Image (tube, rainbow, N blue to C red):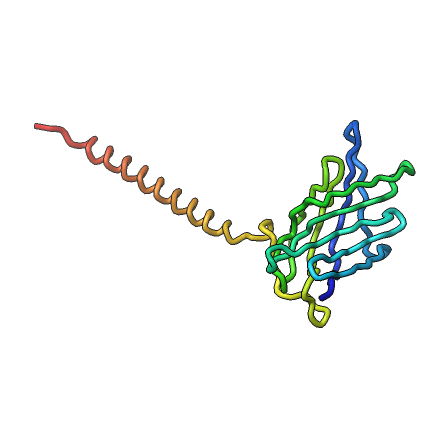
Length: 183
C-alpha cells in the first residue's frame, strides 16, 4: 500500500472571513513539501510550506472496494499574520474504486466549511494500491465527462431539422390552396 501524488496539479486555498473578505493562497509545488502515511483503511497526505503549517488530506476506504477524501485539516498563516485553522472529518469527495486513481482536469471546489474551500486544477491522486510508483487507470470526475454533450447537440440538431420541415410543409400547403377556388 502506498500514496502516490505527482504532476503539476494546482491547489488554491480560499478563506472567507466575516465580513466577506477573501484570502487566497496558491500552492507552489516547487516550495511545498509533502509527506504521507498509509494504514489499511486510511491514508494521509500532508503538505506544508512557509505559508502553510499543514494541509492534511485524509482518504478512507468505504465498502472495501472504494476510496474517497474523508477529511481535510488545515492550519495556515494569513497575510495579516494571524493563523487560520479548520478541520472537517465528514467529507465525501474524490470517490474512486480501489486500485485506480482519481482524476479531474477541470477546476473543482472542495468545500471544507463555509469559511474555507480548496480549488483544485489538474488533480490526480491514488492513495491505495500503488504499484511500481505509477498511477493506475483513472476514475474521471463528472466535470470532465463530455460524452453527454454529443447526444445533446445531435438531439438539438434533429429537433431543429424537424421544426424546419414542419414549417416548410405548412407554408407549402397554404400556397397550394391559395391558387385554387371552388367552381
